[in-house]
Length: 359
Image 1 (cartoon, rainbow, N blue to C red):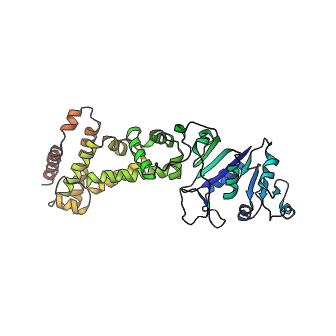
Image 2: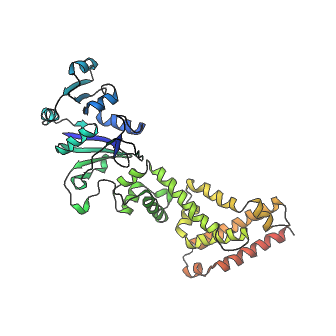
């Protein structure tokens, strides 16, 4: 049984000037775990780039230039080597073997193995990296010849079994349509339904009606994707905090915050009510938007800075409670009745109360 194991970049690149394009410890550990104690097949250039026999494996080198007598000197009890000057001879030698034989590169060896249709299994790691100067690429795979076996999947690495499937069900390789932006937007929408803490790659893939491959193709880990969701959420919130509700800055941000709770209920809940640790920073940033010295002194000219700051903190407690009430209310009529004008009226009323406290 022949298998291919490979790590590929965004454009299927695998190398440049006979060297790897990246050094990812997790992927190297994965490679060692899968191939340890097995037979690995490589071309001369791949052997030269490694610079040695791969330990605890049987190394098969395909070359007309490498002499077996020379590399035999590198053998030890657990590391063996054999040289073939012809690809077909190698196939004939192992075709009846029940052992899993791994093709590990380079480009031409991968092409020949796929062309000869000897491969039963693909181990592909998708790396969130591209290099326009790469000179070695992994061949294009026909999606419908392979089916993902997700039970054998680790982060960023996927196992595909040789299996003819219906064309409309082909979901093997990452599709171009699932760009980074599309995945982030989909994850953002799903977060508003499931909550930030409940997001997972599998749930996002299901929401996209895709395999998990496009997600890992664009993001190294789920945490990288979640970080993008936080950035997008910040941008959405800022549009309200710095909107056009009032010429007075404090009032403008205050009305915008409550309007955000009214119009973006799911996102408000995810950021401020679900208790996600990753959103705590955004909570603090929102409060600090109201606590700048410029805003405080303009809004409370007769108060000291500390008095004004205390007033705004008290205003924040009111705003947060008011916004939460609007967000969580099951009464649609009440929520829709909270127009920007009514929100402004209530904020001015409570602000006036705080001013009188220090009069």
